[in-house]
Image 1 (tube, helix red, strand yellow):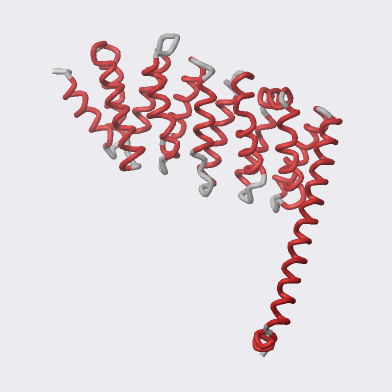
Image 2: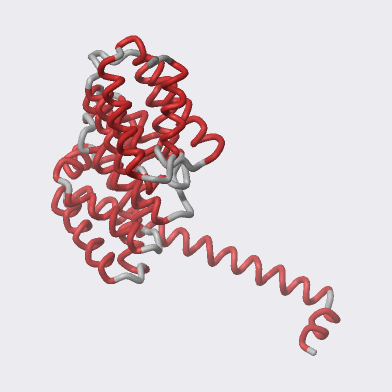
Length: 293
């Protein structure tokens, strides 16, 4: 009675619009997974297929949150070391769910599954975070805030060795988020410095990270329109200065030198353009007089 065809039909019902039905289905599927050992591998593959359809075909499915809840319990029971098939499930089916437009509907359950994997194998933090950076929702600010929430949760579980491998690409993205005109994105990024463990990781790698973020912080202090972001920016600058005054001064001096160089280049470009315009006007005076009329 409870065979593979039954399981496929059961999983189809998870797309129901009735949350009560999905809740009952979640309980039923969880109990079947616990009692029918022979079906466990098939159930995981069938759930993976549902996620593939959501990622690559339909983009929407009412039961993704419930299926992820079940997976959270399943992942928690995985034996160590993790099998390759379990890692493949993470890489191929779970991480790409971050691309889906309806992420907000199942973000908490997905984030919990990511945390479970990192707790089982801290090395997976690198795969999760670097993949999230590739899928970064540049034009959807509400989704960026969700990504930043999950980044912080994952970084709290990340070992220093894994952090060092991805710190450069990670903080280049965070620097862009710090200067984001949308205040919620900038504010959420600056809140990272309220996390003692993340601050510790940053300070341990400050020679590489301070030069990346100090420029973004100075830009915010001069240009950002939001007063709350201004206050947080100055707080972070103060934390960096207290962590290593000498390095902070060196990075600040380099930032000022880079700004001055950029101003010189901009002035040179403007001068070249003015010269070209003047040459054009001399060769084609009729065009100039025509435009004035």
